[in-house]
Image (cartoon, rainbow over the protein chains, first blue to last red):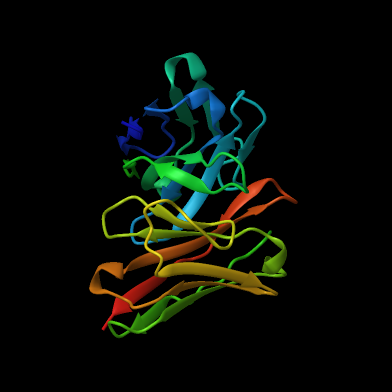
Length: 120
Length: 108
């Protein structure tokens, strides 16, 4: 079954760190660019980061640059997002998404999302 | 940074045609993708590269892109089409993905 499954979300205090994971199955993970996209409660979609199939380069939204790190392990079909110095503005559902092969960065497969809540 | 502008809401009666716009500076020179998001669910790609439907998406969904406006058109709107719709492009000048603010489609 072709799917992405995120994990690692939870409730953390401001300034804390958290690591999200995304497990891919049913397709050749190493062929695809991958992204993290988030959605704050009641708000729209916000792109966070993306990583090429080989693992580099990596790109980040201005709002997370220097605090978040995206990585992947192709041998384990796994994508990760290390999040440091979290603040309330980072509270959101975090989705991992697969960039469609070819074309211009359309995301054709999404996980169900994992909720991150930053609150004291 | 590149900005995509969508109307917050669009309403249409069942059986009619709903048009959701996405405005951006010379967006006609970019490839636009559209996502449908039902309440409590992850987004689903419905149209990619301006006009192409993903496999399994009804033919009632179509896209166009020219000048400063891209449009997602939903023909013969049904109650099941009620959702939030987002446009998205790749900003090659910054290597960033950009989403529009989203449009809530209400079927009257």
